[in-house]
Amino acid sequence: MVTPQGRVAYGPVQPEDVPGLFDAGFHHGAAHPLCHGLTAQIPFLARQERLTFARVGLTDPLSLDDYLAHGGFEGLKRAIALAPADVVQAVTDSGLRGRGGAAFPTGIKWKTVLDTPAAQKYIACNADEGDSGTFSDRMLMEGDPYCLIEGMTIAGLAVGATQGYIYVRSEYPHAFRTLQAAIGRARAAGWLGASVAGCGRAFELEVRLGAGAYICGEETAMLESLEGKRGVVRTKPPLPAIAGLFGQPTVINNVMSLAAVPLILARGAAFYRDYGLGRSRGTLPFQLAGNLRRTGLVEKAFGVTLRELLEDFGGGSASGRPLRTAQVGGPLGAYVPATQFDVPLDYEQYAAMGAMVGHGGIVAFDDTVDMAKMARHAMAFCVAESCGKCTPCRIGSVRGVEVIDRIIAGEERSRNLALLDSLCDTMLAGSLCAMGGMTPYPVQSALKHFPQDFGIDTAAAAAA
Ligand SMILES: Cc1cc2nc3c(=O)[nH]c(=O)nc-3n(C[C@H](O)[C@H](O)[C@H](O)COP(=O)(O)O)c2cc1C
Ligand code: SF4
Image (cartoon, rainbow, N blue to C red; front, side, top):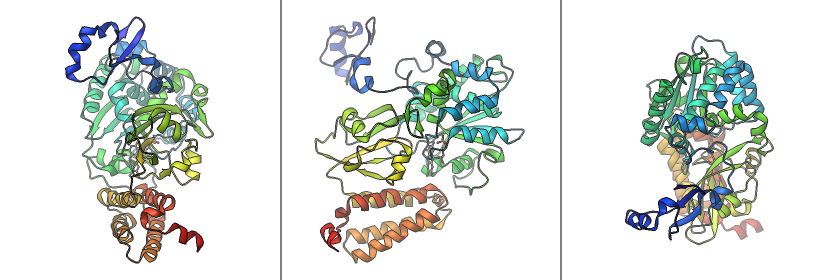
């Protein structure tokens, strides 16, 4: 509730609570058992560093006036005043790396598209958000759609693309509708169209709905799907930046990557780069899910630890039992054991311990989790979601489920463990994309950190 003192929070509110809230005068910020005080002072929110999500929850998502009153389109105005190469340079200098999983430097990708001559270029926004426990893309698209529209328009002007597509997963009907409405309003107000904000250069935007396949989040499968075909991974090269959508140079970026761009242009590359650690610059909207007292979105600069996120923000396990592990970075991410909860979250430090930050999804588990079952689940997920193009993934994942079943059943355990090890090696090295290539991450991390769950006698192994 907005009051002269600031926003006052009430919750969780059930329908039957509403009359009592009115009686208490909640619309004036009055005291009530469900009142949490000033929203901005709630520790979960106050301790965040909200750059990309600065407006979410504050503005009316579809109000252009609200957007403009909260710094909206400042980045685009600045981009219009700059030469395209300077816009690309600003993104490079900010240190922004792709938030979709691979953490590739965004500015370098844009430069490749800028430097590739073509009559038609595209911006394709990956809003498939298929990772388990992730929802930051959805929250941004539903809560601040103009931010994504602005980021994509800046990308279009920077690389010379006149058409953009947002590929939204079918499970996000509200985001789909919000984006369509926002694009219509932005176009009517002249922020999109034949002459963006009167600058004489064109940029158009359309939304496309996926059909529900994890692999359609892989960038080349997404391109196939956007072209109306079955979502199957393409071989690379050529890179999509050279020959992407309909064979034309295409910038493919995650929603979070593109939504970070308006601020980078508005406040300058150095402002954004000043947040973070090592080569991981800026902030990441982490998403807390699983067995936690408080789940939700936490935007923090890189360098925050898993312990801070799980305990300070998440409030520890919902079950009240000790947290044993968290899977970071979606279904292809490693299980990080509690002994590594203090490692700062940055791309390099996570890679060094065989894990990944990915899209920032974090799923927490308490000490009742059976890690052999989780390893089996990783292989079974790959069986279900493999596009089938390459053998290590298509066949390897099926064999992976079988071999883990034999290990769990205690059949020739050491021989089957060696077989699983070799199978993981083959999938890692021989798969065409990260679907098969990273499924071994959760499997191997589960084996490495929780061997006892696989029936491995750790005392005997240590003595041997
Ligand atoms: C199996 C698989 C699923 C993926 N799913 C997504 C996804 O849902 N969203 C996303 O942005 N990137 C996803 N990616 C990563 C994309 O291939 C690509 O790297 C990314 O969209 C590039 O944008 P970025 O540089 O801004 O991260 C996936 C990759 C793989 C291998
Ligand atoms: S690794 Fe799996 S999903 Fe990727 S191309 Fe091969 S079969 Fe398809």
